[in-house]
Image 1 (cartoon, helix red, strand yellow):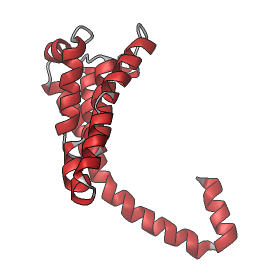
Image 2 (cartoon, rainbow, N blue to C red):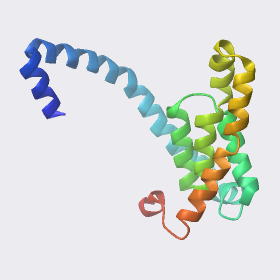
Image 3 (cartoon, one colour):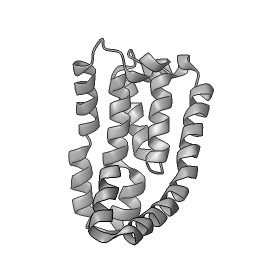
Image 4 (cartoon, helix red, strand yellow):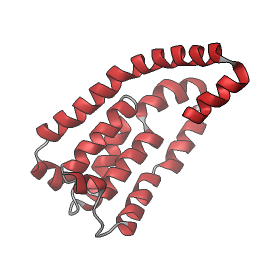
Length: 162
């Protein structure tokens, strides 16, 4: 960051650096409440979701059913990263399997109903949207199984923190 500031200062002068800082301050003030809300959401979800329930529905023994529930949750989850990542963290700390968390986040990224309905179907031919969804549908499962295979027996970061 300091190197970038130095380069901008050298090439464009102090006023340009101050202009960038002013614009970035506005962005930081806009994002700060969202980040705070996301952190609080993760903390509340961790307390509200009993570990037994999370482990039963999303844990290591939940299998394809747990992964399917996670994929469905990712599809219907509204909002952006400030919603999805705190929920993934809460699930992880509640005992969800890595495969389930990967499937959840992947389905949220690829299959989000909110984005599909509001943006894709409004601007893109529905046949193209349908093919995209059909081709993306197996990806959360494939990545979930890959994560399960690659990280079997290894501790997750959240396991080391809690």
